[in-house]
Image (cartoon, rainbow, N blue to C red; front, top):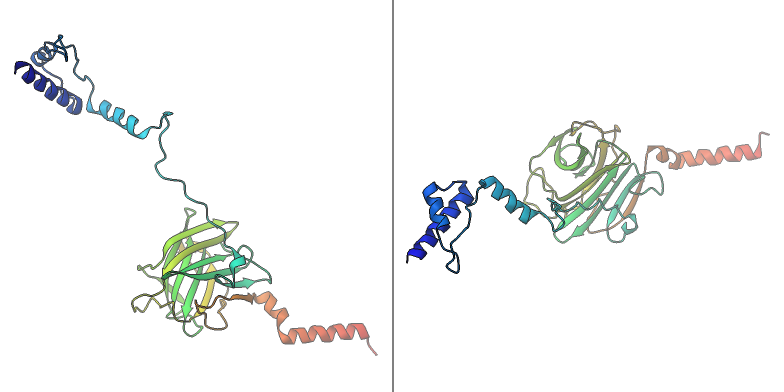
Length: 282
């Protein structure tokens, strides 16, 4: 019983000295030294002389260092932003391109795609700007009373998804943001993003049900300290007809420069001028 009591006392003292940095008294130290080992020999176990910080560092080294002695990464590496695939336009997703003929997600002045994924709708947006790019859902082709999703490039180089509501010509940011699975990148002077939004939402003034058809408003422009400013063009483009997320189309909308040359009147004038030059004057 005496040797058992001595063993228990030694264990308690070792626990205190290791965890709390408490040094044993000379009497306790003598008790430890006079204890017996596992086979009855005089014990020579020294108490832990270091503080708790030393023990903690040893513990951390054993837990958080690899076999080679290098620290493990604190977080897994972030996957790079997957480029938007325009080859899927009109097949597995709908696309709207605004710009020159034949442009894609990296060359159009504005690009938008949408597709259904379960109970969500995934949107991809890209625009030739260093500020923000947005899409609005409207019932009348006009700004005012519109649900808007925007991707904003801030001063830290990040692209964040925001929720806005058009009050007249002014976009008010809404705290309730339905976006999830957000991705964004600013590269080659373009803001590009990808996010999901629920297909069905409770009835609310600032949120629309995406299972219904809406006119799509397209806008982009500069940002100051992560806040959007007025869009780049006075009359942002609007889809000619209501867009349904159940119909995957590949819609091309020529920008202003190409609209001029593609108008019927302009084409008629070009034909007349060409005929006049070929025939010459009488």
